[in-house]
Picture 1 (cartoon, rainbow, N blue to C red):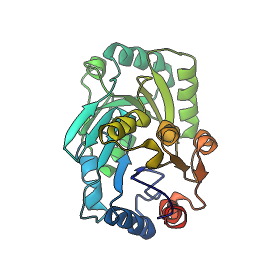
Picture 2 (picture 1 turned 45 degrees about the horizontal axis):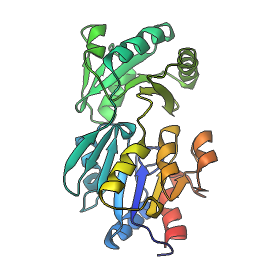
Picture 3 (picture 1 turned 90 degrees about the vertical axis):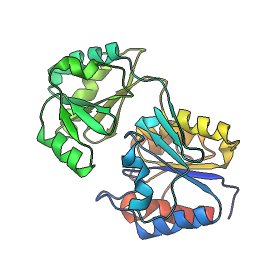
Picture 4 (picture 1 turned 45 degrees about the vertical axis):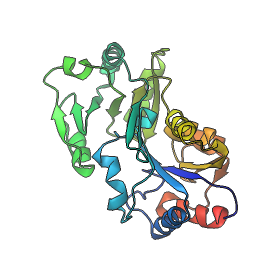
Length: 272
C-alpha cells in the first residue's frame, strides 16, 4: 500500500454505483482487497440507516458488513463494529412546516423518511417509481399536518426534471434561515436539513470513537452533500462526474467516472 490508510468510505449513488445502479467489477475487487488487508470500509448515503443500507454489502456480493454506515447525509450513524447507532441534529417539526409552506408555489411534491418507509405529501408516480426502485414502501399522508407531526432528519423534494429543481432551489434561496440548509443531491432532488448536519460530522464521530486519525481516511463522493466528508478526510476524492462544488474542493479527481469503475481505478492506481 502506497500510504497509511485506515478507513475508506464512499457515497453510493453516482460514486460507488453506476447510473444503472450497479457496482463495477474493479471497484468490487478493490474493496475486497482493502478489507482483506485490514482497512475499514464504510458507505455514506442520504437514505436512512436501516435495511436499505445494511443489505448493501451482501447485495454487492461481499461476505462482510461495512464497518460504518452513514445515513441521512450524516444525520444517522451505524457503527457496526459494536452495533451502536447515533443521531445528530434532526430538523425541527416547526421548520418542516415552514419549509413546506413557502415551497408550496413551486408545486413540487415533498416527503420524509419514517423508518424504512417514505411518507409522501400526495400520490405521485415518480415517488412510487422511486419507492419500488429503492425497496422503500410509500405511504401517502392523510393531511399536510402528517408531514410535520414530528422532528425528522430531513425533508426532501422530488422534482419532475432539472428545470423544476432549479425553480425549487431558487425558492429556497429566497427564504434563507439559520435553522436549515438546502442543497441539490441529484439532478431532480432538493433536500433540507439542520445546518449542523453533514456526512463529515458522523465520520468524525466514528473516527474519534475508534482512535482513527482523519489523515488516514480516504473518502469518495460526487455531490454537494459529500463535501464535508471529503474535506475532513485526509484524502477527499471527487468522481469526475461530480458536481462543480465537489470537484472544486476535492484533493483529487478520478480519471474515470462512476460508470467506468472510477473508485476502483483510483484505489488501484493511487492507494496500491
